[in-house]
Every structure is written in C-alpha cells, then in structure tokens.
Length: 128
Image 1 (cartoon, rainbow, N blue to C red):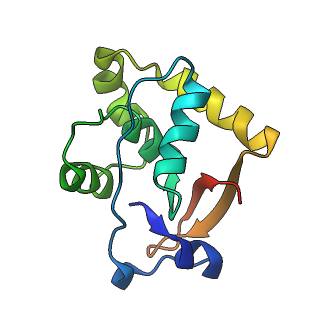
Image 2 (image 1 turned 90 degrees about the vertical axis):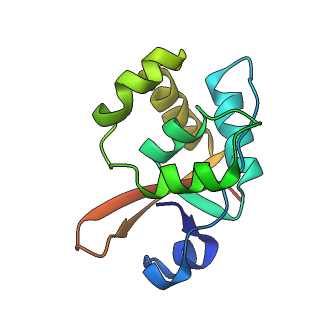
C-alpha cells in the first residue's frame, strides 16, 4: 500500500493513517519520465517498486478510487503482475531499471521500512 509522508518521515507504517489518494499520469516518451511524472503527481506519498510499476500502468482517465484500491491490494512481488503489465505494453524490467537509475541520479529517494508483519519493505518517492 502507498504510504504517507509522515509514515516515510517516521520510518514506520501506520495502518491507521489510511491510504493516500493516487493520481494516474498520461503516456510519456521514456520510462524515467513516466516514473517521475507519477511520483510528482503523487508527491505526498511513497510507493513500493511493485506499486510504481502497477501505478504507471493506469491512464489519466482511470478512477482514483480504483487506483488506490488496486495498489492497496497489490501483492508485493512483481511476478504476480508481470503478465498483466506485459499485456498492456509496459515491460517490468524497463520500469525497474529506470527506477534504479533515478535513485542513482538522486531524483528519487529510496527507504526501507518495516511492515506490520515485521518484514522489510522498500519504498520510493520523489526526492525533495
């Protein structure tokens, strides 16, 4: 599930915080531009890699409630959604590689937090 800025800053996921609204973006020439646009439109939230991959697959006309619900129920493994994304024309590896490059360039921040079940989860957000 996407997390809020306060969860990011506190380093803890708070289930009582609810899920932040998520805004879809249009089509862009490169995967990096698509990721930056998605994170910019949702600058008050942080997302797992799988949520970013899934989130950039939505179009601008998609209902924000549907997007939030899909991301909140998203499994944490990219393999579970790879088939859906390949069918839509998005290649998971390309998005994943672009996200890694954006972290290296300092455009995107990465932070590991602990989920409620005690397992670590890595989140990404637009760098401040």
